[in-house]
Structures are given as structure tokens and as C-alpha cells.
Image (tube, rainbow, N blue to C red; front, top):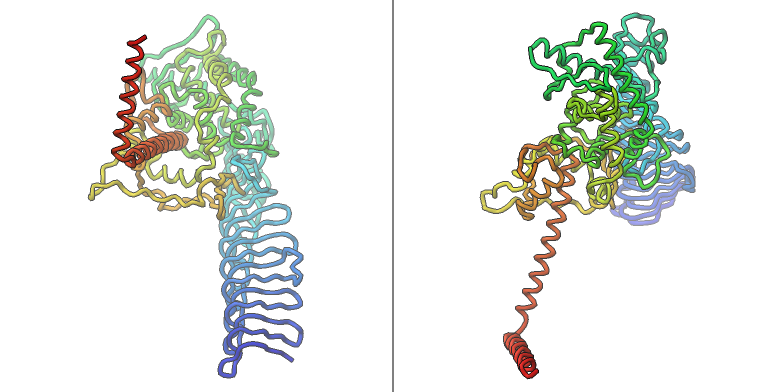
Length: 632
């Protein structure tokens, strides 16, 4: 029979006690009116449970180990309700798979993350123990401990009872992206494909039950090179080399400007040298070239455009290896250990490259370069200034070509001995700016101080000030007027456990911060983070000092010592750099003031008599020395 040893109240088991059943299972813990109630340990032949109880059933926080010897990772630790897993909890399965998330009635239900033994990871919605709703699935993932983006196979989109169903996006480790609809786990219906070299394909009926549809309405973008690979009977470079980008956009843009000049009657600059037989080039003001009317060629212009494109491609191929090395080097800029996987460049690191090469001191800000790249339809960037956007190698090449056109090509001041207007501009950018300066790093954000704070949290703070933030508004935020009481707003305390952690790229490319002591903090996009903030904590540094920091980080604000652009747009990298510089000045100023206070206190502690004696001694010493000099 059953045996109980412990407290009783009114003839019932209540209080602390030990209860053993005939099958040798036993319970030790709190009792109430004959029921297990409170906190206790229950041991059976198949396992044991320790945690909260209510009226004889597991309820509240508790851990259930399904192996009595606890020799395997087979347990659940989390919330319970009426003897069922209910709420939030972690389940480790005997196979080694793990699920962390929400439960309902003993099954996975709500938001949760599942990790399988083959390292596949799903994070998203569950319903009745099945993947259902929106979710993100990553194949063969791994724990990435560094701030570097791996090239992974991922799916982001809708699911229905465990299979992909509805709208979704598939990204592959080869750099191919498919956006479209799925039906019962297969691609079906309209879709767009971004190939590994940036070529773009779209059709209202591209796939039929996972296969390419036998239709003729596929729209192949003008950027597609029909001579590379075939997607079924359509020649599409799905897995073409990433450097094999289409360059016709740049020659078409030149001709578009020429046509626009003819239409409006504006004077067009034509740059030709004795070494060039290229397309006529327009030196244009800043406008969006994508809004111009498409060019029309006669035979001579067509030949010139083809010749210009060939020359530009030759320069790309000539420096392809060097550009690839720089791309990889900057994508791995924050790595202490060499990654064992292919990596992708973030815009944050691309800004660092532009800064290292002093390109932001040519009268254009990093924000200006962002806008130019966004207006380049070949780049296919999603956001204009988002610092953590991923740039594939083909996008990186388009960015470099766009920068070269803006700085050299349209001005007609490329490398003199290089044929081709676009080619000469790209050649000069690579040989005069990138190769000599890449790797000569400036600043602290991505180096010594990259893990000082959560990059994601600081970005949303910056975004609350305005993106991109102008230098004028930066100063306004730093030197805002006092509040109604005549005092500065209090500086919010930054939690200690959020200092000196580590910024990493987690599963699915998520920016994550691992604090020094505490749980991981995934990227947060709460609406509360977009509320306007202030930087009055910098006012103690002084307006002149803060402005000097601005000039150092953003040199294009001034020219020859004269401020010419107080509305200079500050991107996130520059913003963080400014904060670090101002923080150093604030600490230095505080140390100086502290030493001055200590000196003043030490002087105040000296009695007046001692101070008077010191003065007399000093005077007598001087008098003696003068007498000695006279005698000599």
C-alpha cells in the first residue's frame, strides 16, 4: 500500500511530507488537503518531475525528466497547466532535437524554435504540434559566434500543416533568391528569381507544382545575359558566376541622358580623348537616371555602346581577384577567427571601405553614396540606409561601378591611358583609391569597440533621431534647451548586463547581442524604439569639441576651414563613431576635473600656518641664493 510520513492538518496530509506508492514511485514536498500542492519532487520508474503542483497535478513552473537516471537529454523544462505542458518551455528530445517556445494542451502551439539533429532550424508559428503560419526555416545551420553573415539556405514565408504553402522567399547558399508562392510544399504560380549574378526573371506562372511552367510569358529583365545557362528552355543565368554581371545599364544610362539633352535642348558634354573611341558621355547633374526615357540607338551608337561595355568588363575582369579579396576581407572584418563558410558583406562594412578609402571626403557623404546606389536599378538593394543589409558580390561590383561613375566617369577624369569612359573611371577608382587604401582602417566602431553596446539597440536609438540624421539635427539633439525646471533631462541608465557583450549574426541572419551576463537579445523592431530621443548627455563635452568631432568623422561638412554643409547626412556608422569620440572626450574631461578637485581639496586641507611657513622658506631660499651669487 501507500505510505505517508509528514505533516497533518485536520486529519489530512498538509504541509511537508513524503508519500510512497505501491509501485515504489514517491513524492517529497508540500501537501495540502491530501493533494500534492506547492513545490515538490515526484519520482517514477520512467522519470521524475520537480516543480510546482496544484491539487495533485503539475501546474506552474517545473521540469520533467523522462529518464530516471538523467543520463540522456530527454526532458521538458517550463510552464505547466493541469498536468500538461502549457505556456513557454524547452523540450529536449531523446534524438537530440530541441524545441523552445510556446505550448498549449501538451503540444507545440504558438511561437517557437525547433532545432533538429541535422542542424536544420525552424523559428515561427506552430499550431497543434505542426508548423503553421509564418515561419523561417534554415537548412544545416550552425552556431555563429562572430559578427559575420554566412551564406545559407533559408526559407521565409507561410506554412500550412508542416509544409510550405502561400507566399514565401527562398534564399540559397549559391546567392539565388526566389520570391513567389508555394502550394503543398512546391513552388507554384507567380514567382520572381534573382540569379546569382543579379539577373532578374519574373512570370505570372513561372512554376507548376515545383516544375518550370511550359509557358511563354516569362519576362526576362534586360539585365539577363541569354548566353549563360538555361532555366528549362529559357536561357537564364540562375547559377552564373557572381562577377558575370550585365553592364548594359551603364551604357543605356549614358544614351538616356543624351536623349534627354536633345529633348530639352540642354548642352551635353562629350568627353573623347585620342585614346578613346567610345560612346558620347554626358556630364550630368544629380538626377534619377532611372526616370529618363529609354535610349534609341542608331548603328554607330550601338557599336560604340557595345565597345564601351566590353572595355568596362575588361577592367572588371582585370581586377576581379583583387575585388574578391577585398569583398571577403571586409565581410570578415569583425572576425577574430577565419570563418569556415562563405560570407556576405553588410552595408555597415561597405561604409567602412568607403571611409578607409577617403571617398566620403570628396564632397559626397556616405548617405549620398547610398542614394546613388539605391537609384541604380542594377543593384537591387532593398533599403537605402539600413546598415545591416546584405550585399552579394555582384551587388558590391555594381556599387563600385556606381561610385566610380559619380566620382570620375561623369567628370571625364578617369585614368588617361585607359580606353572607354566608364572603364577609365572604374580603373582610376580601383587603382588610385581602393587598392592603396583598403585595409588601412579608420575609426573604432567595427574594431576595438564593436562589442561595447548592442548594435541593433543603438541603431533603433539612432533611427528614433532620424535616418539619416543631419549634422544640424545631431547638434540640436546634443544641445537641446533645458526643461521647464531649468535642468537637463536625466540620462537613462544603460543596464550593466548589456555592456561588453558580443554582437553576432545568429540563425537565419538575425543580428543578435549576447550580453556579458544574461540571455541573448535578438533584434528588436518595437514601435517604442522609434520615438524621438535626445543626446543632451553630450552637452557637457562642449559645443566646440562636439563640432570638431563632427568635422573629423564627416570631413565633407567643411572645405578650407569653412562650413559648407551643416545639413550633411550622418549614417549609422558615423553616428556611432561620433558617440565614441564624444564619450572619450567626456571621460577625459571628467578625469581632468577630478584631478583638479583632488588638488583643490588637498590644498584646502593644509593649515594656514603650514602654508605660511612654506612661503617663508621659499623666500629665504631665494634670498640666500641671491646673496651667494653676489658674493661670487
